[in-house]
Length: 346
Image (cartoon, rainbow, N blue to C red; front, top):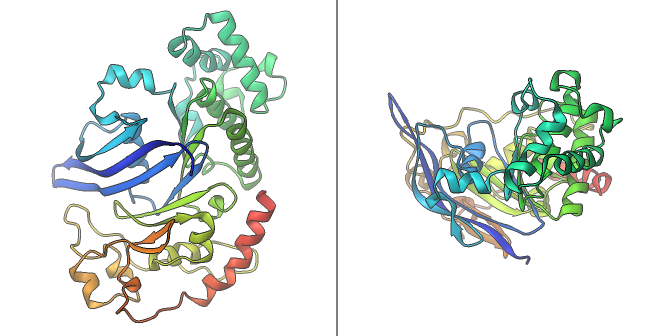
């Protein structure tokens, strides 16, 4: 086990709305070790982005942390002032957002945009900062980098803009990089290039990555560990192999089942919709959509049951008295596909 640099404990976040308080994040705990990649996966609205924005102090005005701690090197980020967070944000913890066009200033040359964090956080003089910006622009694979330092965001393609956003996030060599669906807007070929680039840069600068995605396929060759989120809670977590080869929660089965593969054209959508978090269910939040739900699922929230030292799942199906349910055949068949995906990624 590596050095632990981030520890999230029992995080709870509410959004105040005219209809009442939406309990968006409900008792979320996880950790991040130095140099590792943790993927947080789940459907849209499961709480992935809200959780990670709280690490950056970037929550919306109507959001309120009502419980828990976010410990970065043992210090609670949630207790820090906005001024203190400005010193951490971009320097120690950086974020790559989903849409590169909205992350970049359309009126500023990209060389200056990459150099800006160095000038602000590391007090590097402008000439040196621009020289370092040029180096990282080359590192992220922008051709004719010297010439392109003077170009504006609209003069780059979507894939190039995402590389520039990665350059800005990494220029200060942050300890933690949060990547929020960084490849969603890109086509599959560019997506693969960006993921390879992130892995390569991670090794060079020894940063830890929190990778947010709804696409489990992206995770296979990218992550060391996976946390599966549903309705504002983590419902299963384990190593990438454990989540792919031995998933235990019916929701994880559903996510895996809805992934396209070359050999399968039969995609299974998870029926139903997530619960209303204005009034969260008292039992298992997935019970209403779970074909294997038992009576207790509607009444009591399942604890985390231990599958291995690194693998836990919050489902009553793991209770010793529960009926033995085997994962759908499709999940078993897909294991070969994941093995191939991992092999091609490594």
